[in-house]
Amino acid sequence: MIRLFLLFGAMVLPLAASAQGQSLGSTMDVYVFPAKGQEASQQSQDEAACYEWAVGNTGTDPFELSKQEQADAQQAQADQQAAQQAGQGSGARGAVRGAAAGALIGEIANDDASEGAAWGAAAGAVRGRRQGRQAQQQAQQQASSQSEQRSAATEEQLTNFKNAFSVCLEAKEYMVKY
Image (cartoon, rainbow, N blue to C red; front, side):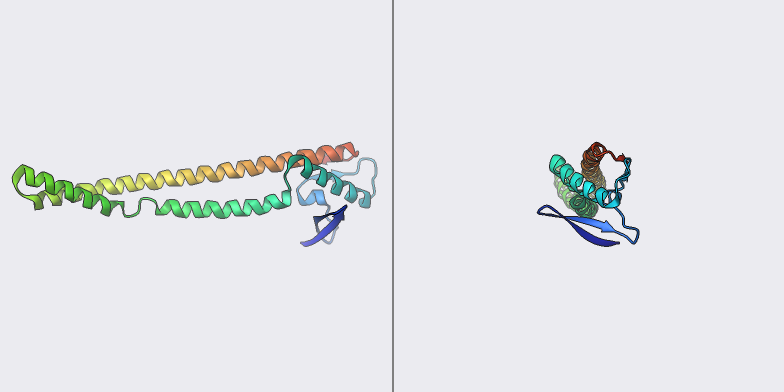
């Protein structure tokens, strides 16, 4: 796809074009039909004007929004990788804690700290691994939830923009569907 820029007032608008002369609306999956037989050049001007109007009224620029979606996808991937790291080493930490507690209990109970430490280390390792898995699952769920929230917010912004863009074009006597 070739990227063109349409000069509108003092603003430069990105306009994607293909060999068939794809319109601004169609680059955003908005289908615009000239209901009153408007010429292609008039439609292009009207779409550019409505694009600016929609950006101004919604605060959303769909071309910037696509960049935000890419950044959100990268953030989601980084969050998932961090979630996989959560809980690592918890089995070893649990074994150390369990050994310390077991040694203390073994010394008090039967004057044999080493046997108590061995039992405590085994129990601590099992408990630590279980807690590590739980922490990892919680971190993954949280990362997934945050990613879904960002995606939903982006989708809502895009829908609001398309609604505003459509209303403007309908006022200029075009039929609009998305």
